[in-house]
Every structure is written in structure tokens, then in C-alpha cells.
Amino acid sequence: MNEHHYQRIDKGSKRLKISEVEREGRKQPRTEMGTYLPAYPPEMRAQAILEATDGLRNGTPTPKQVAERLGIPISTIYSWLIADPNASQARTDFFAERVGLHLVKIEGSSDPLELARAREAYRAWADIASKRDPANYGQKQEITHTVKPEFTVILKPEEKLITDE
Image 1 (cartoon, rainbow, N blue to C red):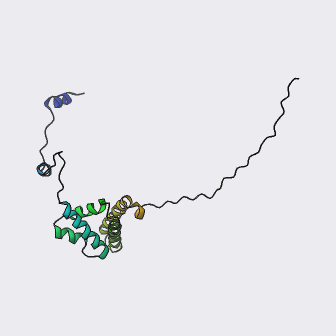
Image 2 (image 1 turned 45 degrees about the vertical axis):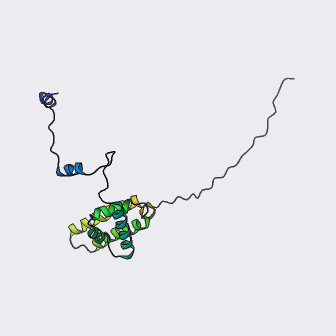
Image 3 (image 1 turned 30 degrees about the vertical axis):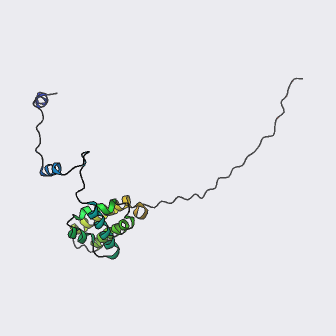
């Protein structure tokens, strides 16, 4: 170890300044146990999921329109749709819409950068879909056994023991 190492340890490490995000996070309301309270009320979450699922089924309103109307980031609605256990059909529709959108962007791209972005977005959404909805988007593996084992048992005849009598 060199001298600089000892000096640094003796002086202590410098404290980093708290970022604005951390400062805001520390101001958020918490439960008695110290966990953060949800940023949006559960009623708003249920309403957003219901409207977004209807929109995915019928085409209107889109999740983006629902987010704008309720004043919620679109990423929040996406995470609610992905994580909600009761929205399995909506999740399937949601992933179909996202993957299909990026397929259209791939086919309609006019320059290499646009094509690369669309391809990466497609891969990302396909990967998320395969993990969150494996029944519809995961790899399908079917195993079939075609060999039937056959056993033949051969019994040896009993040998007489020779004894001295």
C-alpha cells in the first residue's frame, strides 16, 4: 500500500451532495414502518387500469390518452398493466400492441438510425413480453418420446448344488 492510500483513509471519504431526486424522495410521506406510501391513490390506479384495458381491447382510449387525462406518466400505466395479476388479458393485448407497433415502425423505417431504434424497441418489448407473459410470448418447447423401451428377461435354469454325501 502506498502513502496516498493511508492519507485517504485517515482523512475520510468526502460526502457526496444529495441530489434533488433524493431530497424529494426523503420528503415523501411514509407509513409507520417507514415504507413509502403510494404516489397515486388505489382508486386512481384501478380506474387507470380499467380504462387502459378497455382501450387496449377497443382501440380507444389508448393508454397514452388515459395517462394524459389522469395526469400520470405513461410509464406508470405501463408498469401497472405489466404487474397487475388481474389484467392478464389486458397484458396480452398490451404486449401485442407494443410489439406490433414496433414491427410497423421497422417496416416503415426510411433511414438506418430509425430502423435500428425500431429494432431495439421491438427486441426490448418482445423480451419483456416473453418474461411477463410466457404462455403467449415465451418459447414453446414440446418434448415427445418416440422410443418405447422393451425389456426381455431371461431366466437362468437353476443349477444343482453338488454336495458330498
